[in-house]
Amino acid sequence: MESRTFERAPALRSLLSYLWRHRDESLSEYAIATEALGRPGDFDAKLDATVRVQISRLRQRLEKYYEEEGLERPERIVIPLGSHQIRIEPAPVVITPAPLTPETTQTPSKSRAVVYLASACAVLALICAGLCAALLLRRNPADPPAARAEAGWFWKNFFANARPTRIILPTPTFFSFTRKVGDRFGAIMLRDTEINDYRRGEHSAQYRLLEKELGPPNLATNYTVTSDTFASVRLARYLDRAGLATTVLSAADAPLEALDSENVIAIGTWGTLSPLQPYLDHMNYVLGRHEASVDIRNPAPGDPRKTEYAPESPERSIWPGVIGYLPGRSGHTHLLVLASRHTSALVAFLTSSNGLDQLERLWKAKGSPQYFETIVAAEIDGQRLVRFWPEALRPYRP
Image (cartoon, rainbow, N blue to C red; front, side, top):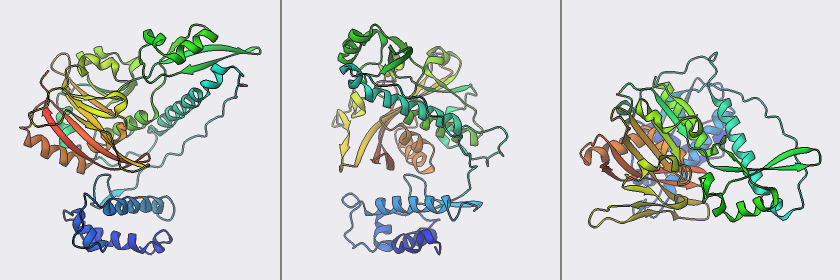
């Protein structure tokens, strides 16, 4: 409260003090708004996002404090995503990434095709950076062990069969066009988000343009999507702290036959989850094109046929996603599908006490089915998760 980080933020100091005094209570947005933020008695959380905005700012200010003045503190005050409750946690182990080595930049061609797909190279560079960062974030065996965490009820159920478990990152299909610049060979990588099948390349106008100029491409499946990669790292760390072992692999290295003997957690989007199509075809909640909706194949009477993406402002929007807890091939293994534009939001939902509590209440209200599907909505500000909540749940009946 007396730090430089908070000295010019009286509203956040007041909010922090209020949350601390009521840390053992269940707080509503209305109570926080009227008692801590001075909002009038007619405050309506559905129309006024003041509480969510201020909680988000407080969360960011706490992170800033622990990155600077509070860096050496053994314990930290945190506000989990999707929650208003303060929690005390031990300071995490800090791992300093090694610097990345810049690669030599090739001289761009004046060809229209090369110019047209310059952005594809930039996307590829971002993906590579994400993979490097994910590898660097993996725990070093020499690091001191983190405090053991208690796994939520959802994960206890998922791992109850004592089967090995792998987290699979579906790999987007890239077409690799080789080109020669002077006496050196390089490659232009094309990713058309409408296509995730090498055999359907000719259905892409960009593909046809490059093939005409550079010749037939090769298939490249050694990349994953940055956001999904970080989501899988976060999930693996959470499970590791709870003593639940997993391995993280790309779909290229992890065929679906693993479901005969292992549990599988698949993280991806509308385009990249296509290898799971035999399972997705039996689900009632289906992630729509480019993740802009969740379509409901067999809606109950009076229920909507879809849940759609909802923009709230140029920066803030609500995105739907699907969590599918399904049986594996043998009936003795489990498949967990996390499908969304923002898969990190689904991981945050399943690794926070607030998210798991919301899910458990809805799950019990629907009869506690062994296998089920859930629609989860996530409010996103830029790339930052603001809150999440489950919108629907029904038993899985293939």
